[in-house]
Image (cartoon, rainbow, N blue to C red; front, side, top):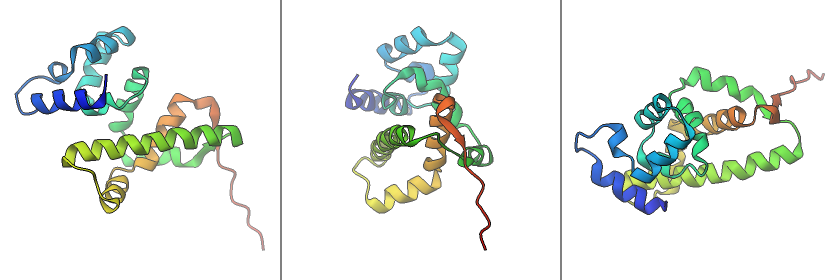
Length: 156
């Protein structure tokens, strides 16, 4: 479903008193129900906005994204000690991270009702700890592709 359609439907439903479940376009709800048990669909619909769901390219990741959205900063910081296991995974990480940043730009733009400035993007990135959130996402999606950072050596 095109992001514009999701954004329009979400905008129409905001402030109507409908439940999170009711805000989701029928096709999106159907796709979530195909992938998850009803209790998980309800959790995802409660945590993620329709705009957020519309930018998830693989809806199988919706539960991971919802869990990350609810994580405390302290919990997110635990993921900061992890890095991709090799150069191939580093390229994969960077590729997905670029898409993540584009999605964040789109989401900020939908909240603002216009294209965000570079300053607004930076402020949003820092305020929402998007770097840590992406690292948590990549680690939870691909746990076998991450490893702990090597301890810094104390050279004299």
